[in-house]
Amino acid sequence: MSRVYNFSAGPAVLPEEVLKEAADEMMDYRGCGMSVMEMSHRSKVYDDIIKTAEADLRSLLSIPDDYEVMFLQGGASQQFAMIPMNLMKNKVADYIVTGQWAKKAYQEAQLYGKANKIASSEDKTFSYIPDCSDLPISPDADYVYICENNTIYGTKFKKLPNTKGKTLVSDVSSCFLSEPMDVTKYGLVYGGVQKNIGPAGVVIVIMKKELITEDVLPGTPTMLRYKIHADAQSLYNTPPAYGIYICGKVFKWIQKMGGLEAMKKHNEEKAKILYDFLDESSLFKGTVVKEDRSLMNVPFITGNEELDAKFVKESKAAGFENLKGHRSVGGMRASIYNAMPIEGVKALVEFMKKFEVENK
Image 1 (tube, rainbow, N blue to C red):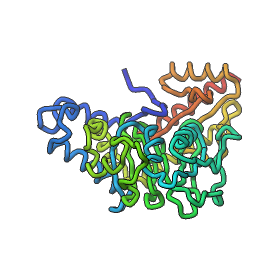
Image 2: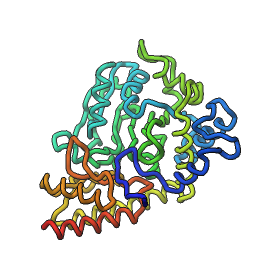
Image 3: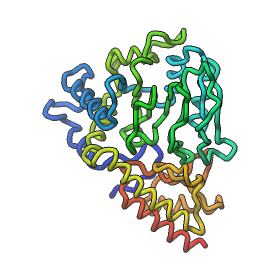
């Protein structure tokens, strides 16, 4: 059976050459006689895998030495609690709510202190990014939190909020490594890797070293303290070893593709094909205001639920997987992460044109 075009929002499509390489090394990693799945995370071989992965990530993002890189578990959702537990010194934080995940992070933070919702786009089903140039930042806020790319709603911050000197914390799960990013603008940036970088089970945290302290909220579990993981170089307990190994391969693949500038160009090209069609189509339409559109997640609808369902069913039969929109919004969504080839997007548009003609 040939591979399908997989438009899943995550776990998502991975580069074929990475999968082939991993398959070749499955039984015997570089002559050591065992799979990476089986080896000790304390071994010299594995130490080399995780250190190389970190070095390559640092190089891709030009991460300065005063930032720590951690490969953790618990997914992005665990960070919703870990961030306030470690950073809410004054027990105050400001949240910009632009989608489901930012909303969940905001709700979680309320367990640990005063979380203020200082901007939101919920009034229009999260279809835009609010103006964040002059926000009512709390004078005693420990940080300002955003979700930079909203997977469900297909919006993206094109300009970071003006935090008026407060630490910026950002969830970049669904736009991680899709384009260049200036790490120095953030105090903490994190993402689940299962969209652009690897299999589910790893979350990468890039954090300013000065924010990593012993001073955490009382009752913070050992496993949820950044300092514990930073001091142990992500090896405090058994890490998600195989997932990190795949991430390392994807970092190499991005380098080979020309780095993050090249990735951005490739992603802009793909997104343009799909958005241009949606803007011209008489049947399909995008759901996001133009200036806030994501390059990674493209939600669209026909305006008729039965027709949406028919499209999802027929697209699947034609070899396009996971085009159904998130259960909370319905419609359709094409996630076109780094590893989605341009041919996949072109083929999808051709299919949509055909569907439009047949269902006018």
